[in-house]
Length: 374
Ligand code: KG4
Ligand code: ZN
Image (cartoon, rainbow, N blue to C red):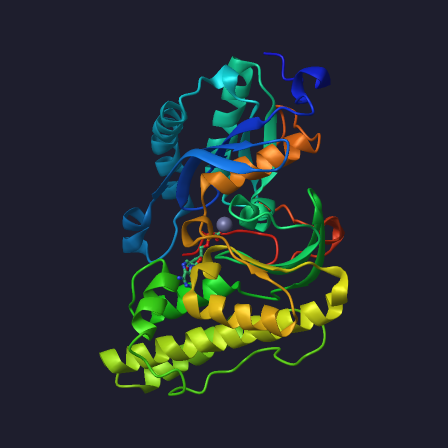
C-alpha cells in the first residue's frame, strides 16, 4: 500500500468552504467519535458525537489497565464511527478529513483510533490528521465559544496539569506544569484511598457536598512559590495519613473529600493567578479545560481568578471537559484549515509534549505524558 500522503492540492480545503471532520479518541479509558463542521467564518457545529466509558471494566483493578483499555477500544470504536456517520448523514468521501488523537496516551489504545482513522483516510481518499490530545483539550472551549488567541489555558486532567499560553493552532508556550502527579491523579488516588469509586474526581465532588472543607489541614504544595509549577504528590501522602488517623466514618470521608477538593482548588487558583500575572495583558482570557475542569468548585474558583484579572473565563460544558470526540474533530478541522495534514506513517506516541520547548526538556510526570491510572 502506498503510505504517501495525498497530494497537497487534494488536501487543502477551498478558502470559503466549510470543513467537516470525523474525530476519533482512544488515548485512555474513553472511546469516542464525533463529526464536527467548521465554517470558513469559524462557526462550529457538532453534527454527531458518541462516547463510551470503560469504568466498569477497570473498577475491579482500582485504576485503568492498559491492555483492557486497548481491547475495549478495539471492540467498540467501529460501532461508534458507524453511529456518528449515520447520525451526521454523511459518507466517508463526503468528509474533508479524518482526525485521531495520536498521543500522548496509553499506546495500545492510541493505536486503535489512529489505525482506524488511517484506514478511513485510505479508503475514502481524504487527508489524515494526527491530533495531540493536549491540543484537543486546549482548543475545546472553541467548540461552544469563539475564544480568541492568545489565551491562557489551564489544562487539568488525569494525566496532565499544565499552564500554557495558547497562541494559535500548533503554537503553545508552557508557563508551568506539575512536577509530579497530575491534579486528576490526586483526585483519583485520594478517592481510591477512601474506598470511593472511579473515576475519583466525580466521586470526591459528590462526597464533598456533605463535608467540611476545613476539617482536615492539608498542604498546598508550591503555593506562593515563584514560577507557575504544581505539585500534588505530597497531598496524596497527607490524605493517606489523615484517612488512616480518622475513624473512617462516612462523615470523615465527606470531610476529607471536601478538604482535598478545596486544597486542589487552592493550588490551581494560586498558580493560575501567578500565570495570569506573568502573562500580563498579553492574553484575552482564561480557558480551563480537561476532566478536572468539570469540577464545580474548581470552575467557581477559577472564575473568580479570571474576574480578578479583568478577563473572561472560558470552560467547555462538562461533557467536553472529559475526553470526547468533538474536541478531536475540532482540533482536526482547525489544523486542516491552518494547512496541516499528516502522513499515513505518523506514529502513535506515548509521550508528546504540547509545546516545542518541552520536547527537548526532561519529561516531568503530569506534564506531557499520560500513563495508566492504576
Ligand atoms: O480529560 P480526562 O477525561 O482524561 C485525561 O485526559 O486524563 O480527565 C480525567 C480526569 C480523571 O482524573 C477524573 O477523576 C477527573 O478528570 N475528573 C474530575 C471530575 N470529572 C473528571 N475531577 C474532579 N471533579 C470532577 N467532577
Ligand atoms: Zn484528556
